[in-house]
Length: 127
Image (cartoon, rainbow, N blue to C red; front, side, top):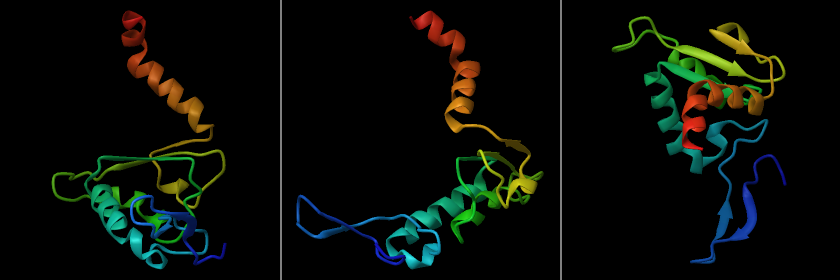
């Protein structure tokens, strides 16, 4: 598969049309994937509104998409102090200096710890 080819090789079970993925390959930008435009726009709006954007397991190096998380940082509307960015990834990213918290760890381990912290006592009483 080439850089700009997004055909999955599968067909729609209802109409038989070829299916296209909606991923942004390394070397692509969101503009290279027309079917992604609406999702990108929605993600951009949500990042602007967010008090916190949590990035899990991303290199934050795919053009266009990598800039979305930092959109939460600027003071806007009801967010006079701006938002916060948290990054969980094993390797460094180009956005590390923007993060309020940066965790170098496996995402599954971090989320398991968050789950335990938030739901630990609830899970014990439900058992």
